[in-house]
Length: 362
Image (cartoon, rainbow, N blue to C red; front, top):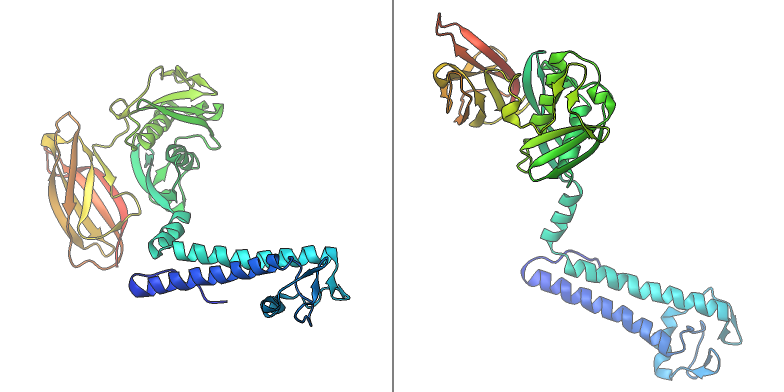
């Protein structure tokens, strides 16, 4: 049986296609010849004119074609194959002819690009952002790689409900979501994600815990362009008054309504544990005096790789955005940290400091 390879460009690809097609044609011809002779095969020592089946004779010219296909272990009696053995013999011949032909057709039709796409499709992943409570008081973010799925919102939210992993906990991230909380259903209509949780999600905790879990869900779901706000449900009913703290959730909440736990400088990228390549993009929200703050990158030895001033789009009581490339030089691969802070207008000391552990790429 010839070795089948994926067709490549040029003459090599055409040659394999021709050989694959010819191979399939030969197998089908043999099967056809077998059925033309009565579909019963040939005794091990057949001769021109030997009786085959129920009185049919195969032409002498076909005896040599049929001879290699004879089932040597079949039971023959006076040159005639038994009916049950004839059926098994025909089935074997059919499988032997069809399977290689199908394999040849598949090999001929598949290009290297198609094969690569098929393999990649079986292992596709995507990176999502998960929003946590940093140092017990403000929002922080990490990135997770999860299997790609059409229901990416539900998959991301379930990753959030599962809680932070070891690396995230080591970086000071925690969750205000009660453990064992479950997502019952998620639907998205006209930019509003309706998230239905079990009663565990709405249980216990003080005001900080309640606000924290709501903000975590809002920011996690609104990272997707199809979601602008989140409507909270508990066991299928809109959570108009959430937990004993009396938080009113009778309408969808967007990010603008969930800023009470944002730090003055909220860095969304890079996130905790990300690997940095120079330059990397620094982006997020800020509400600082005159919209100014500073960013530094410090390696594991304490050496400052870069330090620069950042200007947000707004400040002094108004939230603004920032997004800029940050380049660094002379860094050794390994652990590092991004530090953002605002200088106090009173005495110049750093305030609103946020430290994000990252890794420098080799």
